[in-house]
Length: 340
Image (tube, rainbow, N blue to C red; front, side):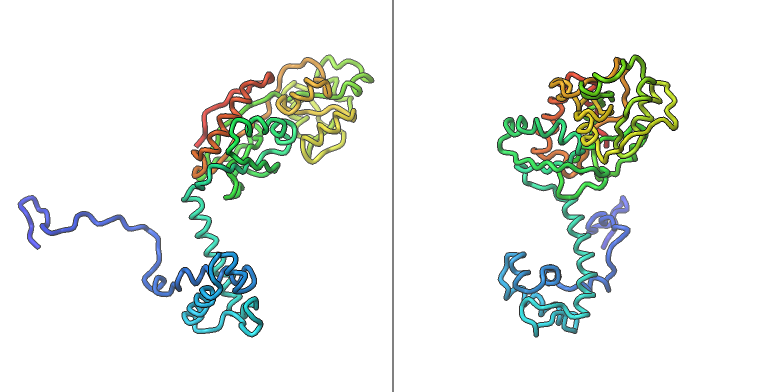
């Protein structure tokens, strides 16, 4: 190899590629069994036998048996008890190996699902806060289907943290209370959909037997309905400058839509954001209590994994729901820029 006047080595193949600061050692690479055999073995132990594994993997059971024999030859010990037939049990050693291998394959599968976006743009799996799902979105989902008849939507009412979104879920609509939003993980992206005001509401029947509520403090003596805790009412009174310490009795319900159901039946006064009660107010099932200054306690967010964000089905739904919210008559329903 010679060196030119400029100091470059003739015949060099160029700069070496960057080396990752992690990875397997040569010994670890040599220890790895065939990956196809690992897939077959995981299915055998998980599904309960060779034939059942073959059905799950959609390959011939003879091929599953060959993979199993290859893995046992590599391991130098039996992993499957053939004495009980093709749907038998793993040996004790096989069970221990299956537990370890399944954990590793699960990590690989999760990494692959995160890296490779789902290509099916004809399905949309959506998690949604139960109150919004039952009180608002369910009654409008037919409009989305009419606009996008080729997209099959699956709506699941669920209350969970945004970071807990399953890999099989395209997006999650959740309510974020002011001051409680955590830093978003790099794997997710979010957009604020709407920030509706919080209203005190009750049924006309309930209000007919009550004196007029001229100021927020008047509600302290009324029958108040709570969600899981008294926190929402406490913050509502706090924004109105009312001390509610020790004065917030009343039944508690697990979720907001249950509280609204109790309010419709005349059991007391509930708090709900204007988006959830919009239909009930128009129908006369509920009436806003008092004419108080608006209170804002949080926002609805739409969160998705970055790998799903630009999917056609989700993009269509995002544009659709932003348009629907912009047409709602109550509150500040303007979207804000996406986060992340």
